[in-house]
Image (cartoon, rainbow, N blue to C red):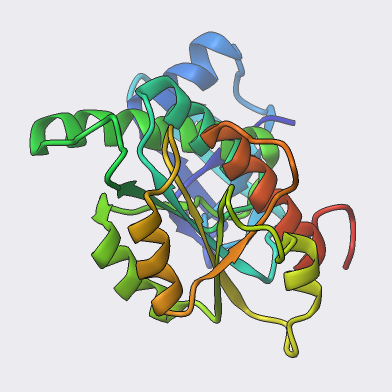
Length: 251
């Protein structure tokens, strides 16, 4: 059953609507759904419903809530990925896959070796594109909420942001003694939130790793092979959610 996000839900009356132009076109012209057919609707706050289409117009799809589906799709662990900005297509892949895996927040990170430097105009244009990719990935993977895409941060800003996380790690190619799995399994208390720093193409400069380490961010190794930035982001997030949360079917 096709899935959509809707924020216009009247829980008491048992109705909701979808008014986003592209979503309305997708329902009516791409899927060619008609009155009486059913959809999965999620409110973006982990509540989801089976709904029946009541009417379709050019501007709006009206639906009736038939039943609430009690499925916990979101991990209890809140994962923030601070992603060193790579080339545009790579970042599109990253936000798509991190959404599928179960990441909660994605922070574009401007670092010393970042190829991409965002000004205000390009930032708005790219952010709109990234948000659409996140929405599509969240629908496909049946997320209960949309990951939050933050405004780009400098490394110093991101270091301040780490205070919201219980634990923070940074995969680093020159780290040899701290395998990521061992570090995660050695945590005395299971964290409720974790931050993962991923370098851009070329990785982090040594002084940046020193800055992170001084603020308690733990350097870890992903193994002997050197991974591309997009691969490192996906692999690191998957390992964290496997070791500390529900990826792999662990409840």
